[in-house]
Each structure stands twice: as C-alpha cells, then as structure tokens.
Image (cartoon, rainbow, N blue to C red):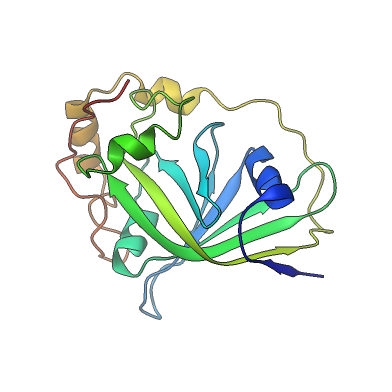
Length: 197
C-alpha cells in the first residue's frame, strides 16, 4: 500500500539516488494542451538539495516542453521505479522552476553536480523542484531490468558544440523557444557557460 512522507531522507533518499533513470511529467494549464513525459538519465545529473528540494540537469534536446510548462504553471511530478531489488515506485509531486545559465543561482546549483562536465552535454537549464507531496507505492508490476551503462551518444554529440553553435542549433529547432502548444520555452539567445569547469 502507498505511503506518504514528510521529507526526502533516509531509505527514501537512498532509493532515489541509487536509480539510473527517472521520469518527469508536466502539462500546460489548458485542457487541450499536450502532456509531456520524459525519461531522465546520465549518472550524476540528479541531486537531492535538501529534505524538500531536488534538482536535475536539463540537457540539449529537440524540445523544451518541461521548461515551457514550468514557466507557465510550475507543476511537475518526478517518478522513480525499482528495476532491481525490492519493488518500489516513488513519486515527488511539486513545483518546479528552470534556472537558466544567466541566473545568479546557476554556479551554486551547478556545484551540486560535480561529476558532470556541463560543456559536454549542452547544458541549458537546471530544474529545481520543491516537493509538495512525496509518496511511494508497491511497484509489483514493474519488471526486473539490468543497467549496463549510460549511453555515450548524448555526450559525444553535444561535446563538439560551442555556446554559439548550440544557440544556432536551438534556433533551428521548432519546439525549443516555443513549446508544441505555443508556450514560451527556452529563452534565446542562449547565454554562454561562464564560470564553469
């Protein structure tokens, strides 16, 4: 049976931090808008900031739906599934905010992800989520699956981009600056990655 938690700590935090993949779900306010569900991976790209706040790195891609939805209404759900060990599903329902490269908080937040080279993955935002509801459920129907390794493709693809060429790439994509439903997405031009290692 499902259980609610007041904070992200102890066994719950250990479970979340041990997973190699999680999923994010967002939606616009309008009833006809497109619900977005995204897988998130790459070891080291997720961090528990405190007992009520988590963050993850938002890398280059073909869309910016999560960013657009968060800019409009802030609603987000993150979900982790146990693909090995005891069955478990954890959901964090909360309010999210994209922190962009030119935000004064950028360098401090980026320091929470020491294993990630931001120049290698086309890092465009850090998504910070304040948890409002934390729950787990059984996960009995989630299959066993093994983790082999992170795919190297994303890093190798975007490592060759400069700030200028990454900005040009984003300008060419239909749903980066504007979402599928016409909401403001990633603000362009893309600020340079300054003060990062």
